[in-house]
Length: 501
Image 1 (cartoon, rainbow, N blue to C red):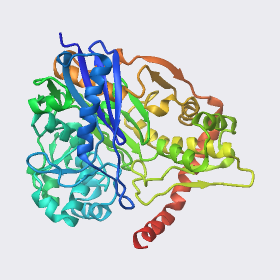
Image 2 (cartoon, helix red, strand yellow; image 1 turned 180 degrees about the vertical axis):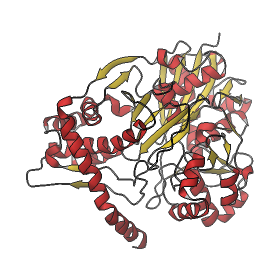
Image 3 (cartoon, rainbow, N blue to C red; image 1 turned 30 degrees about the horizontal axis):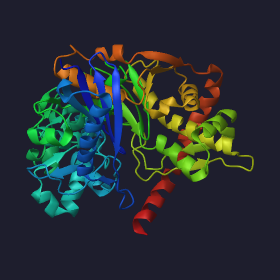
């Protein structure tokens, strides 16, 4: 009997392969890393063949580690990084490195898109601001700067789409990844003729978008030899990491919400309709369940801020020691603010010139204050997203997932800043791959619907906010936003400097 589902989560730093039994039990997982290239300021690229090698290697390792026969795999599915631009020929061969989500080089293309379409109109069609962060601007950058690459390309794909082709021989994408391109009509769930015509992009570059639960195809003989999978194994399309995380966190019904605390970090909810924020701070994915949407806000440098701080400022100090110091510091970090904009910012600021800063340093500032300020600063930025989503519907609690959710100090600080209970399920780091596994199970009929995710990833405990800190953190939240606004002109001037010198 086919008793297992294999999920691949193609992240920024590597591919995490996980094997789940159909009852939801995690049997084994392994990670195969790959590099990211940063050839210039604002550029971020990966070699797609590194993903394929990682998928092949991790699949074989996982099957051996779990002592599972390939014939017992009921289905394979995917979660993957979103908002990239990979151009391939008709045989799936990359024509250049993948321009990944973190790449913001296409600022001129962004401006041109806004001129051609209008920001408000683009937001209303796609559920997203028009931005250099999305696939469309990156595609236009290739057209403008590498015309020969553009001319010889047959497909624009996402990370999982590339792997699916090399597993099945089929070019496909799903609604969730399509909704991260700035080319997709989010309510009609199809490529937008209006936008494609305005940008002069050929629709034939884009695979027809389909529900995440659709069968992409089956594993070919060639792919079976490369991966160790059995020829004919069903491959379910899966989705972008944001939508997969939503399912893995058990956010599968209207009004429930979750928070991923990782290198980048986001807060999202499930809703029956897209939410169009009047200030366009947040955006919308299509949920793995095609009847739902995932209103969302994603900041660039949450865990990245913490990693940078540790590596740059803390010498050999461990994370445990930094966390301990942060908890010993006074809430509010002695009036020290940290602005977490090391990579520019997507939601909620949408300012690729924004940069990080400590504001309020004094002769009395301690290392403990700085540690706490970093954790609090990420929290203030995330609260802007949370306050936007509260307009879409009632949010009373957040399901917490991601590697950062293992840190007790950060959890308590976030609960205090948000003034909201944080729910911790069984699977934290594996939640995104669990979402892909559940998608596989729904796709091949093992599960009737996505509600099974709540039963599999049950809540283990809750972190409650300290209500006595509500007034203090509300004041600091206001000052944090005022500080950002005061620095916007400086950010622009520094951005001009970096581009010209």
